[in-house]
Length: 228
Length: 191
Image (cartoon, rainbow over all chains, first blue to last red; front, side):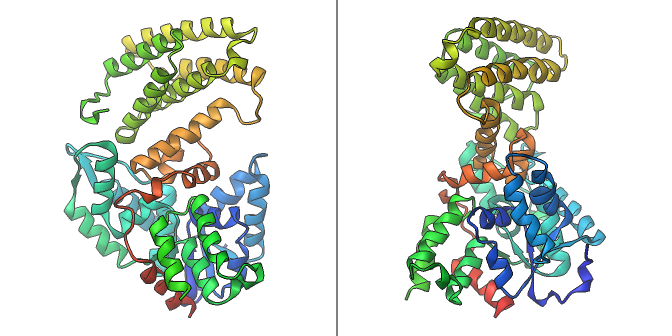
């Protein structure tokens, strides 16, 4: 297991389990091999996508593909005490952001906080397909409005907590598996799959169907800008 | 459902159990589904393991009673009696303010699992599917994926795939930055 400080962080991408699941389900893990980046995961993500599923008949084969990426050094496991502490702090804050009649609404789990904490510690790009954590990081007010609309309730956004979170996160940049695919398409890496421009359309929808939180409108935006 | 009116007290749980028993006796598929959804929606705001179990049980019962190959099986009558007896016991325990975990998980869910295993045409059992469905419901309400999975005990791989087939990610307030901006982040790092 590596420490966060051992590598050049300039090309580091910290990965959440959600994005790795989307890529793996679509046999796109090879992108991690071909792209010139240091893909990093915290130990908890490895436990989630490799160790636990390897012990399950249902998911053993899926886990094997991800285990191979770890064994090949393509997915580097990092354990960092400061990242861990940061993650705990983030989780506590995220779960005090929204309140219903002064009672906090718990929206986030420690699992998501671990990868986010590591990305912050390493000042790295954060690869995340999951929606709620992204909203916590980028736009807590949108999360508030989303939950209010879905649950037909009124929530209060704790502005002080939101400000503290924003300062702690210091501009964490989030990308999704969709962005990696679009970048790979831009660089011609998808040509091996054939089908020319159609491969981007098919690939983005495949990632969406695997759980990547990308809208149909965003996919259309990609097709418009990438296929000029 | 008006979440404002949900009071997670003994009375609320008692209400769910009473409704579930009535719906089960009357083969009320819609009623059981509603109970399942209302119970899990309550959990979105207040973590309560009993309500998660009640939701999963109601969902599983709704699935079982909607399939003739279960209801026409030889064990069905005994299964119904067992579940109704257990629900009576749950009702008594709720009224006494006692813990429901044992009877919900070790009795009712075990009965459901046994019935399912005897007559199911599929490898994946009804409780397994209930967990995935209700986890996706929690995610649809705004909880994170890991939070939804942790509350329901569902498999994250399966929930992610299920969520992907819904319109959850196309709902308002979920788009935060443009794709151009995000692609720009990748280009910053990878060139």
